[in-house]
Image (cartoon, rainbow, N blue to C red):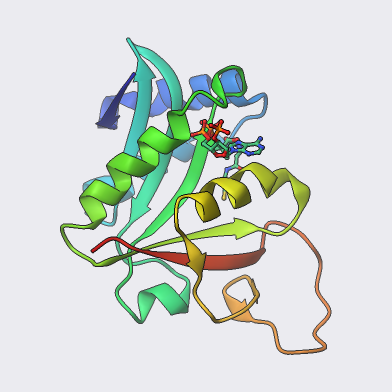
Length: 167
Ligand SMILES: CC(C)(COP(=O)(O)OP(=O)(O)OC[C@H]1O[C@@H](n2cnc3c(N)ncnc32)[C@H](O)[C@@H]1OP(=O)(O)O)[C@@H](O)C(=O)NCCC(=O)NCCS
C-alpha cells in the first residue's frame, strides 16, 4: 500500500473508483472541484493505493469552515473514506499517518470531526483510539454551536469536532 497526493488528471478516475468501491457516487465532477481547490492551495487530497488500485482517500484542509478550527489555525482532516472491501486492514490508519505527518510541519494540533449516528461508528472509534479528543465546544450543526435545549435533525450536519496534539 502507498499514499500519494492526487494529481489533476486523477479526477474522473476518482469519481468512478469512489462510486464502485463505496457503493454510492459523489455528485458528478466532485473530484474535479476538489482538485481545483488543491491547485488553489486550499487543501491536499491524499490517496491510498494498492499498486494502481484506489483504496481510499482523505482531504487535508488548511483553513476549514468550522470556526473552532478556523479561528485557532488548526488544519482539519476531512472526508476520510476507505472502499468497503478493504476496511479493517489499516488503510485509514495509513492515510491518517500521512495527513498528520504533513500537518505537524505547520501546526501542533490536527482537527477532525465525526457525525453522531451509527454510520460514523467506525470513525468515532478510530479517531478516539488514535488520540483525538473532543475540542471542548460541544455539538455543532452546520458549523453553528447547539445550545442546551436545542432541537435538531440527526444528519450529516450534526457533528462533534476533535483535536489531537501532534507535538
Ligand atoms: C472509518 C473508515 C475510514 C475506517 O477505515 P479502515 O481502513 O477500515 O480503518 P483501519 O483499518 O485503519 O482501522 C483502525 C482501527 O479503527 C477501529 N475501527 C475501524 N473500523 C471499525 C469498525 N467498523 N468497528 C469498530 N472499530 C473500528 C479499530 O480499532 C481498528 O483497528 P483494528 O482493526 O486493529 O481493530 C471506514 O470504515 C469508512 O470508510 N467508513 C465510511 C466513511 C466514514 O464514516 N468516514 C469517516 C467520516 S468522519
